[in-house]
Image 1 (cartoon, rainbow, N blue to C red):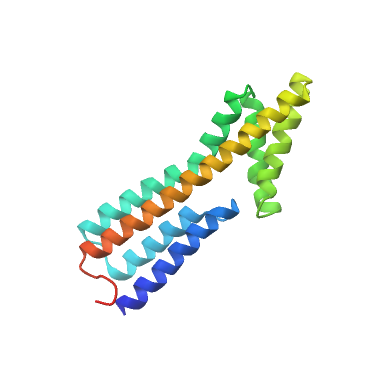
Image 2: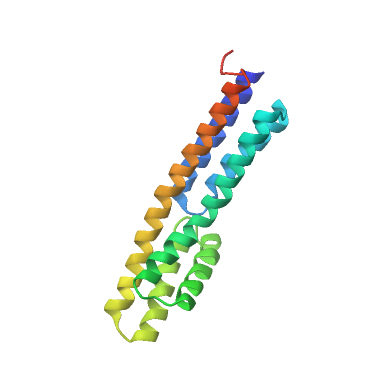
Length: 167
């Protein structure tokens, strides 16, 4: 029974990791839910609680880091917080309406439009959008790293409970 639970949990976590590439499916949340289901089925003990708290903090931070890194890159290029805010709103709405990349495309277009309206300079507006795109790729790399750390925490949790695979 434990072996099946381990395999199902690991497959779900791997799916969450891969889904981070879509920008729509909340991969870190999927990894976290997989850990929660594992804990509910296998039981919470001190190790499980500590590991789950660490994974929860990582998931919350990782889900927020996108906006932080993307916005910071755009702001560094001179974009206003108002432009960035509307860009993030467009990203949220179009991630739902046009997955998997609608949100990312909408964010770039809205940022460029707001910045062009403000500056009347296509080059500066395009630079802000380019910086936001670079921020998005940086955030993706960071989210993938956080997802791997979360899965690593789960492996330590399973190992510490002496419930290792096939054992």
